[in-house]
Each structure stands twice: as structure tokens, then as C-alpha cells.
Image (cartoon, rainbow, N blue to C red):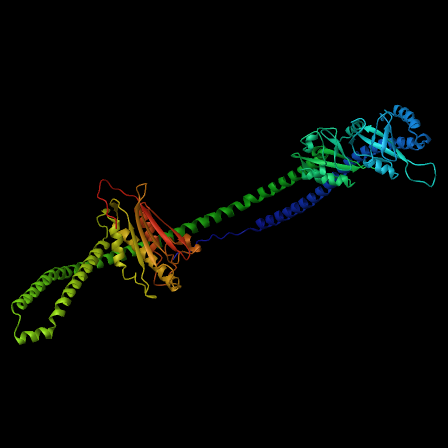
Length: 633
């Protein structure tokens, strides 16, 4: 009996004190790290919020500038609309006045007078209809408004219209009688937007009330396939769609988004003087670069903490080294003892099994030899007995032919012994005895071959014959005791050369595998697997073949209970068995594995499906030359 060796390890008071101090230091470092990280996050969020608000203020300042510019233009147009000349509604008086004002006010290149019907006249002498224009409809409602960008029907240019209603002189009459409009070229508004920026590579753009961008840059950044912009509310990019919705709704804010495969801050603010909204696209680094000093400080703190941890670890490392070495030595010794014990047990079991098989082989060989002589004697004499009986039968027939009327005593004797029945039944009796002695002779031959102890080493044998001999020994087990079931054995033997092997050891492998298959089928029968008559009957398939590599493959397949998943990794382990006590030692498959793999340099493996069966196969290298081939069965 082996016991595991343990090495007592005691810590000195100094070591315990150092561990206590180290624990305090580690706890202090951990708490300081948590507090530092929390403080860093608070400082980071506060500084980032401050920088974002600063960027948003830049946009608000730009929006305020644009609002002031538009407000000034609206005031100028409203002043013209409230003049007595405009209120006269006489185009002949209004036209020279508009020409004069268009020349005086720099952003305007012309002026327009709208009649109540929607017909308009320009200071350049052109007329057209604008009843369908939204800006005209709002003016007729008494609202000074700024239109979305549009193509002028008089000049064909892209512009925005600043429109003011013409109200009558009567103080109680608020219905608009017409409108004055001044178109502003879009390029003037773009010039104002271009002045907005926040660091390098930042740029601004504007959306009108429908989400259509007014941009000073290439429209391709918004995914437009042509130079005609469309509403971003219908854009393929979800980032742009969400941004456009926020801007059209008149919201303001700043968001970090992933756009064009880069990170950007998008700050957006609505205008007060027009239904527009301005957005500023800021590369993330333009804002995050101001956070760099905070990151450097945090990195330095982390570096100091890591250095302290390293110092504490180095201080403890030398103290724990001898404990680790002692434990490793103890584990190594325990492992070596366990391995040695397992090897001794396995060797002992193999010796016992070998001695048992040797004794069994000698016993079987002796019994087979003792059976052989009397069986041969009986079998040989049966030939003469059959011949003598035929001669006697011919003699009786000859007497009957030449003596049709025999004496009464002879006739009475023939009737007494029932000669006709005796003649036919004795023929059957002799044939049955002959078949029985043939069967006994084959069984004796199988026992003598199976009991070979391989005293002469490797031999050239026909494995097909050895499989049949093994089956002949197990023929009684093929008749199951439950439900009178009988196991069907299917042989599929292929032609192949003789193989050089240890036949007695391979007989043992075949016996183990076939016994296991029969046990699996018996267990399946007990579980009621074949209670349904429509199912196939219990069967064992044995197949032999020559692989392309020249190896010999033997497969033994059954349709028993199969092997559960939880034990598949252990079936070749020595002493492992799932059978009841007294029925299995756990050495069958382990010994078979040793015989095939170690003794014959072959392969022993299996496939199994639970409740469907198992298939064991072994591959053996063949060392043969120009030898006779085995006949297939």
C-alpha cells in the first residue's frame, strides 16, 4: 500500500507579519486606484462637457451672425413693403422705386412686386405667376418670411426669397394686398456659412425646412450621386437621417457619431429668423486634443500604481518561492508514486491474465486432444457401419426378390421389427451421427487452434478462419435466454493475403470484442429494444478488408445499447468496467488495446451511437509477399 508523502511547511512570525503588511499595502493601492479612476472619470466628463459647450457656442455665434444678416435683409424688405409707394399697389410707381432700392441695397440684385392674385413683376421688367409658392402664401397671411432655396422663375438662378406683405393704410384692415420680395443669391448665404469652423478639417453646412443641405463643399460627402441635393431625411446613412430630423425639428445639441469611417462631433443650432438650421462638423481630435494633458496625468498615475504593485510583488516573490518549490516537489513525488502504483497494478493484472489464459489454453488443448482420438475413431467407424448396413439391406432385398413366399416365421419377424421403418430410420440415424461427429471434429480443431500460446512467435495465418473459430466457441451465447431471441451473425469476408501476426493473442482480441457485442445486445433485449416485431433482429456484422495502404482491417459491429458519452474516454483504461461484479474485470478492452497497438503496431478504435449500437475496428500492418490469398466467405 502506498501513501502520499507530504512536506510540512510552516510560516515564521516574520513571514506572517510581512504578508499582513503586504495585504494592507495592496488594499491601500486598490482603494487609491478606484478613487483615482472615479476622479479621473469625473474630471474627464466635466472637461469634455466644457469643450463640447465651447464648440456649440461657436456654432451659436455663427447662427447669431447669420440671424443678424437675415434680420437686416428682412427689415430692408419690410421697409420697402411698408412704404407709401408700395402701398399704392401701382406698378408704374413701384417699379422705379424697386430699381432704386435694388441698386442701393448691396445684397439685392432686383426687387419684385406681387399682386394679390400671385402675379409678380420684377424691377428687370419680367413677369410670371407665383401663386403656388409657399413664401407667397405666407406673405398673403401677413408673415414676413424667408423661403427655402429655389430656382427663380424670372432669372433661373438658385436663390432664397425674402418676402414681406403689403398691408393697407386702413388701421383695421389687416388683409395683405400684395407683397414685396427681394431675392438673395445663395452664394451670399454660403459665404457666411464658410466662416464657421472649429479647428482644422472642420466645416459647416445648413439645412432648409425640408432637410435639403445648403453646403459650401462637395455634395458627395452626403452620398448624393448627382449635383442636385435631396432631403437628408431620406438619406441612406442612418446618422445623417437622425441628424436631419433633429435639425428640421428645430433642436440643438452636439453628438459624437461615426460618419465616413471616422469619428466626428456634430454641433447643430436652429436659426431664429428663418426655418433653417446650421451644423458644424468637427473631427473628434479637434476637441479631444485638449483632453491630452488629462490623459497624460492619468497614465502617470497608473504607471506609479503599477510600479508600486511590482515592488510589492517582488518583495513577496522570494518569500513564496521556497513554498512553491516544496509544493512542486511534493506533487511530483505524489505523481510518480501514483504512476508507479498504477503500472504495478497493470503489470500484475497482465501477468495474472496471461497466466490465466496460458492455463486455460493448456487445459483446452488437453481436452481437445483427449476428445480428438475417440471422435476420430467413432467418425471413422461410422463410415464402415454405414457400408455394412447398406450390404445387409441389399441382402434382405435379395432374399425378398428370390423368396416371394418366405416361411411364416420370417414374415412374422419382419412385421414384428417393422423392417420398412427400421431400414429408413437407421439410414437417418447413421447420417445424423455422421453430422454430429463432423461438428465435434470441427469444434476440437477450433479449440486446438484457439488455444495456441504463440510459443513460436509470429505466424502466417488466415484471420477469416480465426474469426470463424472464435464464433464457434461462442455459438452457445448467440442463442439469447431472453424471449428466445437469436443473434444473427453476418460475415462479410474479403479476399486478402495471409497476415503475419500472433494468432493466439488476436484470438483473445476477437473473443473480447465479440463477447462485448453479445453483452450489449443482451442488455438491449432486457431493455425491450426488440419488443416491436417490426424492428430488425439482434445482429453482429463481421467485415474484413484490405485498405489502400495495405493494412488489414477487421470490423465487428453490433446493434446493441451503444456506449454512453460519459464513459467513452475511459473504455480502454485498465480495470474500468460497467458490468456487475463478477461478470467483468475491466481488462478485456485494455488488454485488447495492448495486443493490437503495442504487440502488432496496429490501431484499435470504435464508433458508437447510444441505443443504436457500436462498431469496433482494428487495423493491422501486413508483412507478406507473394502468398496465397484467403478465400472469401
